[in-house]
Image (cartoon, rainbow, N blue to C red; front, side, top):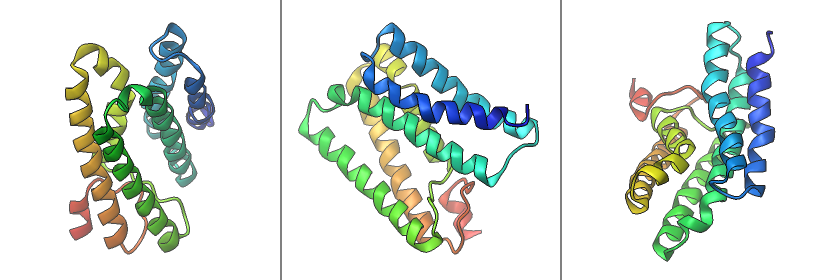
Length: 178
């Protein structure tokens, strides 16, 4: 029972890449997507409720989140790359993230993905992205997600540059000044 949160997180880490081999928006895609999405919501909640939070669990969760978000994103990438402007925008966000992680690794000798409110918002929007595409016009969804992802990437970069120590649970750039 003590390993349940980490088991859920590990299952998301392992199963998320399978989304890349499924037809986007198909029944199997939705089934696996739903499991990964729900495991992302439940693992941290369980860890906190069972008082089983740990640095290892937080790091594992970051890797599982990246695995899930990338898998969902790459599954739907052909749909996103209909215009060159979106391709460039996605590339700029990816470069900002890469630079932030590189600086974090050099500075802290560790993977430095942060659990900021904006990163959580981007993660949540990426998780529900397939649902949003069903409910709203595609261009509106991409615009809102792109703006929040850009701001989030810049915020994480600034926090990584300004912080003296790695705090994966820093909620916003404002905490850097407190």
